[in-house]
Length: 170
Length: 355
Image (cartoon, chains in turn green, orange):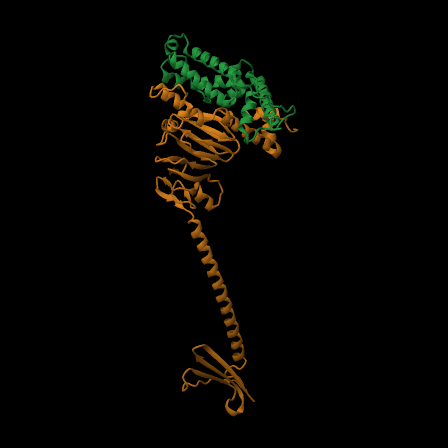
């Protein structure tokens, strides 16, 4: 028996109607935006802008050879534009020693800033684990590594996240 | 083994198999606490990165926009209140049979022997046979939650009025049923439990060879209701259990309510204590009376009738309620006279010695 993990695999097909686009690619677009931006609210804004752009250019979307590739390209461009336009926040101080796991955050903004302080690769791992619910084996397949190295990389990413979060408290 | 470092424990919590750690964490409270903290961290990150409420609201707003109902250049987030109605529909979809179950805490073993850790989602379109490795918590596709004790076996299959057919075959589980007009059905080997809302505990009791007769009677399942009205049924009958009540589901018997509500139980106990005190007092009085009676018999037998100088038993029927027993020669010659007088306050006994 296989574990069915969110999000369901979407087979590429020509979903070009606005409603179909949202239904099929919403989580993919959000994940792509989060990976670039790091802050959940910014990723939500970029997701919204992405779909508004797709609705405006529905003819181009319909004509695209791969709808999915087109949608994700728009999402990436939108997120990068937003990242450039965003006023950079002061970087958080980082604890260098092993920090404790993050508990229920009293300051969610600090957690979001800590997420934004990760590298894109680190965020990709965090996103696969906590947004998409992938197992280490599935993360390994998606990132072209072996499960052990993916697990080590995830631990390092979480260690940095904790360091940024707890360091930012000072 | 020595305590694992945080990275190794993190990998283990997130699904990297490590049999040494399985054994170590089971016996090490410090590592268990750290593992719990890591699971809590996973929950926080899952919620913060992909807040289901915010994402559902955003998606609902986009779908509304895609449907061409309203267009605005100011963005869509301000439409969230408007999208609430759409969200209700979305929630209804989530509650439909096409939803997902979610392991929110702990670790469970799947049918093929793999162990998966929370957070993990399982489609409700399939049948799952789950065994809790330790205490585990699960949110079913209808948003009802199940807390499984270690070793409990729960099966989730599509079906029933809510799209879920839950079966507990071993162990113990506490169900918190999400309110709905449709009833959630939970099966056990000895019958089934149905609830539209509320909370109940279901414990499977196995019949053990050589067990006591009581154990044999209870073999099946014990249901304790904490909230809501719960219906228990099997082939032999149906009962409704209220909060505070427990019931036994046994294969060969109709469901049997075990306990009255808590307040009635307390009242019964109080009455039993009062009765016990009264019985003790009566027993004490009876013992005193028996003692007096014994003493009296001893005194009378010391001057038995017929013996030299023995008693002459006479009565005085002329005086109503007064009897006189005389021993010895009687009259002015001496002896013992006992006067027993019957009155409203009981028997009055007087003894007179004459020499």
